[in-house]
Image (tube, rainbow, N blue to C red; front, side, top):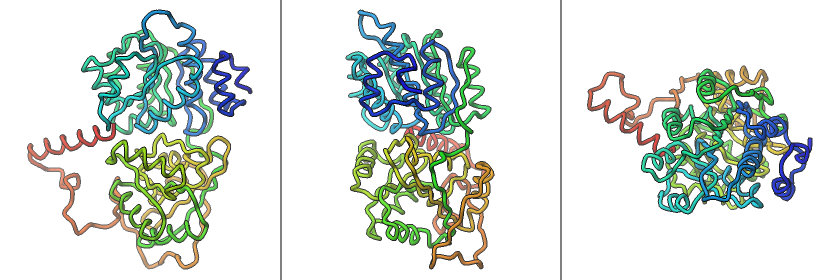
Length: 428
């Protein structure tokens, strides 16, 4: 189906055509007509399906239709889990709305709020925001959300995973009770269903594909290897196959930094991107990766959420994720917009259970390929993986507080709470 058949106004169709698109994806075909009629929707869509345009285009159409000649007021709010996704969605709003004269801004943490506040005071029609920074500004009366007509929750499942549910509910208190609500999620967990029941008014549910099915154009491959030889194999494989633009996933920030340094030592230009990096450093790293200045971008799951890299050819799971659904999110960075892609996983004996869980989710056995010279040693026995960590064996260094026995003093509990709060603030 062509975009011109979906009922969008001429200014939007012109911008879409200039962006190189004529045919709408399945999620766009289903969401755009419904949103144009003012319905609430609950949409299940993976990244790379075109869902951003699926809500951005009709949102722009609707707020244009009810535009008034009075003072500019904030009319649409798009909530997203990460800074990178806020920037991506903001770019889409500007691209598709280029002939409509709207003012929009991305609002997120990790940078000084002064510039963001200045934009708000000059007047905005649309805000794309992460929950934490938006809530801070609302509490300080720096942003007025009382005239919001359309609310979008994008990647709602990831926002819940990141612990933003309380902030989201607090943001709702600043919104008017009458509005159109659009919720997009890759998965429909019980928590997502509960959120939808409290937020949406008689919604239409849309599910464009199997919720845990990666894109058909992704070639998946497992390379069995001993844990201690993973980095060596990764460097060898990148060099042997002359891979360019390789997005590499690790479980931890420290692991991302370490691996990036090791790849550089092996002669492969690399950089790391994760929550502890400043926004400027993250933006610079992504720009260098997109332009080819950096060959390998090593990322954690949270940092990579929302990354939209045109034509990304390779994703490497240096370490498998503990949550099987995260594997689908990771490899969904490639094979977007009809392109082909390859997802390679380096799997050691310790990760066999994680691989089994992933394949059970996919209902598909991923092909194996043993690289000559890197055959796994059959004498090595599996060691348990610490939950949420990259280590498979005890470290000689003192354990962090999160690995101490559950019994602790009251002061220790308070310190732990403050640490968790700081981590959440960094993420938002």
